[in-house]
Amino acid sequence: MLRESSVISEEQLREALAVQKQRSVLLGEQLIAQEACGEEVVYRALAKQSSMAYVNLEKSTPAAQITSLLAKQAAYELTALPVAEKDDALLVAISDPRQAVAADTLNFLLEREIRLVIASPSHLRAALERAYGPDESSPAQQPLSGGGQHDEAPIVRLVNRMFADAVKQRASDIHIEPFANRVRIRFRIDGKLVIADEHPTEVFAPLISHVKVSGGLDIAEKRRPQDGRIEHTVDGHELDVRVSVLPTNNGQTCVMRLLDREANLISLADLGMNEELLEWFSHSIERPSGIFLVTGPTGSGKTTTLYAALQTLNRPDKKILTVEDPVEYRIPGINQVQVHPQIGLAFPRVLRSFLRQAPNVVLVGEIRDRETAEVAIQASLTGHLVFSTVHTNDAPSAVTRLLDMGVPAFLIATSLQGVLAQRLLRRLCSECATEEDSSALEQSVLGVAAGAKLKRPQGCRYCTGTGYRGRIGAYEWLGLDAGMRETLFQSDDPSDFSAAAMASPNLKRLKHDAVAKAIAGLTTVEEVLRVTKVEVVADNEETNQQPQSQE
Image (spheres, rainbow, N blue to C red):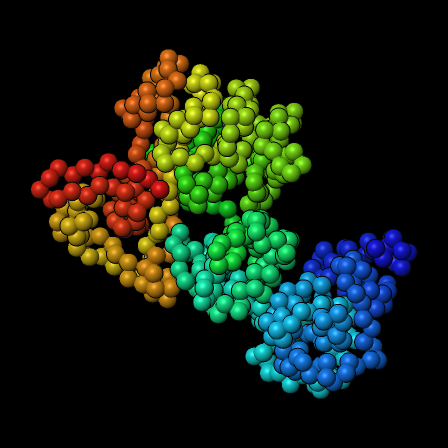
């Protein structure tokens, strides 16, 4: 806007943009710092861009009966100043349009309609001192972030603390849930939800508004689900935060998935595969063509496994393309594409475009429909190695899912190289796990002898008292042999293929891998039961360890 109105030159704009990229400062602040234009000019333009009114507080001080409506401490904490009354609304000056969430806090404090206006920061700070006197707040009342604005709203500090605690506790998700008499915040840590904090209901409106504003969501829309994205920094770690808001009977519930941009992607050797599986998987991903599927429920580590495979294949002699929704981690040397269905950039269309890019390896984030499945399979039949995911309970069911989508059985038989099903087991904390005699349950499920020593969780500071720290994969894998391919050629009945797969020695069951990890002291029998639902029988009966159902 400033460039269009010739307030700044093209050279000044380029210089400011370069500094902004290096130092992560606001563009307007950098333009002021390099004296390209004055503060008032920048904030007038910012107000116009945000469709907000601008108020000049350089020399004026609002009437005492207006400023007295807001307590001194709240005014300084919010960096907000009541300036006038208009049309039954109280006009309150702020300096940062991103602080629009302050309106909700002010509505709560003052119990009246609030209309925000913009003032330049220096003028606003001077006006606050004229109206209330110097800020005498203690350091403990200062923002937790340690930078940015001179003061931040309590809600901003609450959000900063929430993200900091989540990162410290290694949470993968943050859940904000409104109830009739409280707001509950839960973290998902190592796959388990735990209560992190609770607040009075009055906090909910400004909290959810702040999250929605930060995520680029429509703050006025409260009836429909919305998805957004937040970029947040905690202790130097840049987080990509995927935001999902859903209306409920008590208000909008919010789930935020935390993705650390700087997290090191793990290698195949770190996934927790046994030697047999690692050899089979490493051989499978080195094939020149075909399709390989990874299956499991949401949050079972499918993407991590495929990224580990791509890292192994990421060499100068291979061109790798991915289409994802969303791109969770950025891998140097790999071309990654984010789908945008709103503009017609869906999985099938991107895949067709990929084939004109002459790739060696293609990753499809998820096969959700027949069209995507058929395009992916056609790509695998034309000399490309294709990786993708589906949501099924076990490895044989991945083929069943493709058949249910309407994919011809002969195409599956010709192209599918293998299927890997997985779950995540909580790993025992290495600092506090202790060896104890096996229990009757452990003897029944794990098949160990009475008196055998097995590790048990205890809880310590290192694992925040849970007895577990981190997770390890449990795997089921299926390599299609001649018998299974022949079954698919002869019949498109899913039950025929399932029977052939279950009878094949090429199917390695999930329960066997999970049991082996518990016996090795990596996890516990409780975790084995949680992810495999192994049937437990009395000691005097023959043990039946066939899984009844899987998550």
